[in-house]
Image (tube, protein in one colour):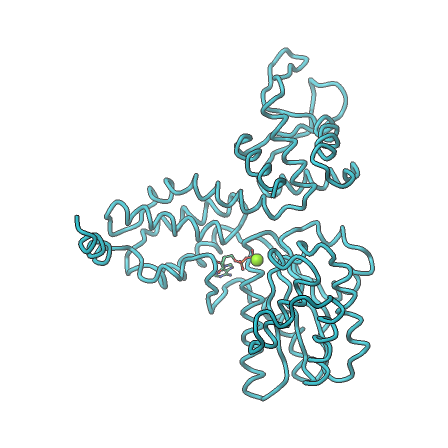
Length: 406
Ligand code: ADP
Ligand code: MG
């Protein structure tokens, strides 16, 4: 086939998608059902800027896919629009700390957004202190209320310093000010914060709960209307996607990805309608994708604990209960902790976390659906917790080894 023909057949190929963009994970819908309460609360916090006051800092947390990023961006965009119509000096910058993971990088990114006409290199090579001064003088000179939205802020390595600087800056400002909205996918992060950082950052806090199957179905129905051709998706496919996502984690991203991949499978098969069979076929690869995404956002030592579990799962012989029954792939909580201490040394990580934190990590790994734990119950000496990996051990090892190396 000539290349022109290849292009022609791609161009005229029938597709179930009306606008594929609308079902991509990065798309922010205008309407966010089941988040009215949260968007309302965020709006009320930032709305004090409209009366010339500085908003409290706000810390938002919840499991991945619960709408934290979309809701916050939506509120900030709306505030920007409103402030524009009233000619008010209210600005926000959105920064994802996964890539901007140091105070220096956060300041640099903020300045780039506030001075869009400066060449890219304008602020590079200066000290963090200089960048800080530049930011504060921008706010002072323009008498602006600046809101820094720091998404995935648990990734900032020198977070205490960053939060301290931002808080302190307000002592130097009489008109205008700087507030922080921090967002984290990590439910345990708040408790690990330095007390001073915690009291500054968490002046207000908000948790985003997971969605249930019914809510996910409504979210998907709305998305399907925008993204797929009329009757392009069988109601059974929507119901199944929401049920799977609700069962896994209540994560809207999983639900949306399932439908996206199912739609691609329908296209590949030259079908005009997505059915639950496509969703079923998409399930394994989407689950793998999501699991890998969850893993990369875990705190370093939690990754190490997970790595240890995968390692032991692959290498440990089955053990025997007192009843003689053989159990495979099941680990004692205590042996995992001991091995984790060794693994942390081997990979040159900082000191292993305490046993108490280790138990928190185990709870969190279970919540993410990566492991299951059970109390030992009868038939085993003493009291312990058993741990079993729910995902492919080899795959986990490979992914984490790559993470540790990079
Ligand atoms: P988080 O930041 O909590 O991980 P996101 O805001 O990135 O979650 O949401 C994940 C995906 O799910 C995005 O594609 C988003 O558009 C969608 N989503 C989340 N909550 C809703 C909702 N209430 N209504 C519609 N779409 C939603
Ligand atoms: Mg997010």
